[in-house]
Image 1 (tube, helix red, strand yellow):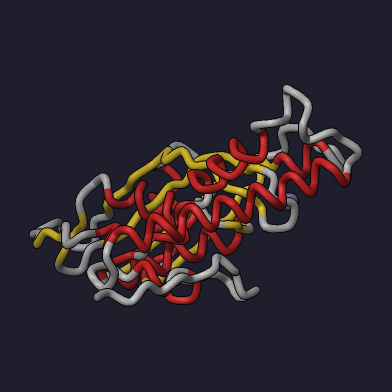
Image 2: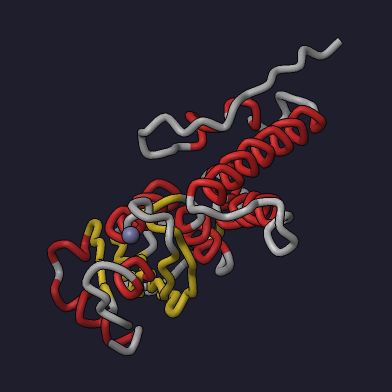
Length: 227
Ligand SMILES: [Zn+2]
């Protein structure tokens, strides 16, 4: 008989790596019904918490318009924060290809739309990521880079770390000659509260390998993504 192991969804304050948060979700180690139980437990915990917030702000959580709000919010977080349940290996899923590409030429995937939640306020920030790398001996399937972006974006984030994590993941996956990532973001927390700088665009970059030292490569990157 299988041992039912329940894990509680309790971020531990560190930046969440898959290994910290979902010990029960290791592929192949546990039957599916356990995973389903975890989701139900997690959603129930979020529902309780949202109900508590509604009460705390002076609302009646049982009035018609709000009665299903905790459930909707719990499902929303399941979707917006599904990056915790993913890791690089499963996202890339072996989609590597050997290439004979021009020496030092770069692969660019531009205008990858993402949405994320800032970890300071749990409000959305949205924008585009642009990723370039110079392959050493392999490339990955074109669709994988947006999925890597999404995996990290769908966790509580700050834009600077999101940018670095995307770059480091490409390094880890491909051991390329160089990586450059640029992320643009509009932060809701900056536009609806505090200084209220509506529409301000925050730009962050991360450079690895050749992109650190070679300015011409960076200029080419900016030219290729139209900046
Ligand atoms: Zn914020």
